Image 1 (tube, rainbow, N blue to C red):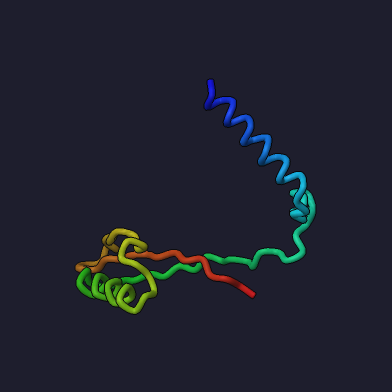
Image 2: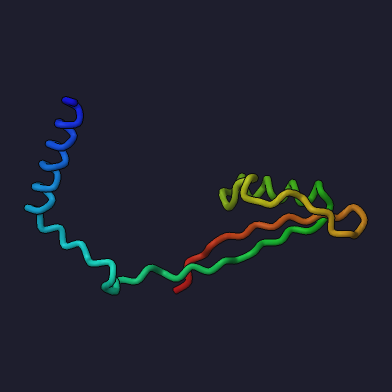
Length: 94
């Protein structure tokens, strides 16, 4: 019971603090002055032998472009000894 009373007191103090602050928070229905930058998906497709595709994925991780786990699993293409993997990234458009 004491915890409930303390919780109510803390909530009351928090509301009093928030009411006394001028936080200038825009309303949800008002358009933002600075709209968020537009993001657009870009797809990277690697096709080749499994050794070449895996090696490229590891190289892209080493240079910091994309982690190994960001790529799809290797998928056979239907051509002999050829697989593919895809990476979809979101890039900022200006």
